Length: 86
Picture 1 (cartoon, rainbow, N blue to C red):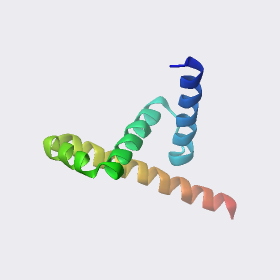
Picture 2 (cartoon, one colour):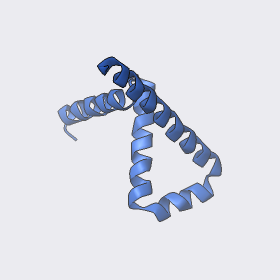
Picture 3 (cartoon, rainbow, N blue to C red):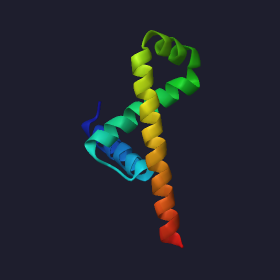
Picture 4 (cartoon, helix red, strand yellow):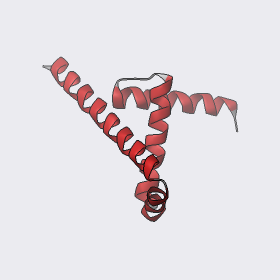
């Protein structure tokens, strides 16, 4: 794969992470990659996601926790942005 593409795509994911959660740290970017991929799998191949969830209940709990973390960070960011606009 083109190394320039990889660099540019990683920058896109980093910006996405920042806009979604307000955090562009390496750890958060990695979480957003997992969150995004799982979200896509869940929407496009729900049977696969369900099968995986049944076979890996402990990991399912981790995914659920990640979803809640991203949602909470996004809500806080929205509230902060709303206050800034007022």
